[in-house]
Length: 69
Image (tube, rainbow, N blue to C red; front, side, top):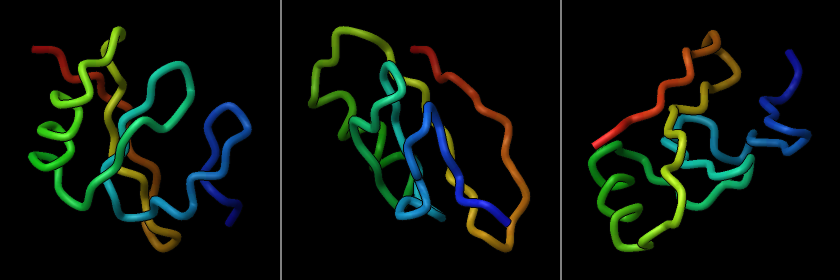
């Protein structure tokens, strides 16, 4: 199986973690969604990030979901 990528960036090192992306760039990551959401709020980003769980190699793909306040 090939590595998980977004816009040519390898996300394999984030396998099993929640990741927040803005313009295809990882702005934050965490093992748990509530922790990631707290980290995002402290960053005061200009654009709302896309948030998703990066699958491990032995898992299938997930559906990308944008969380809105």
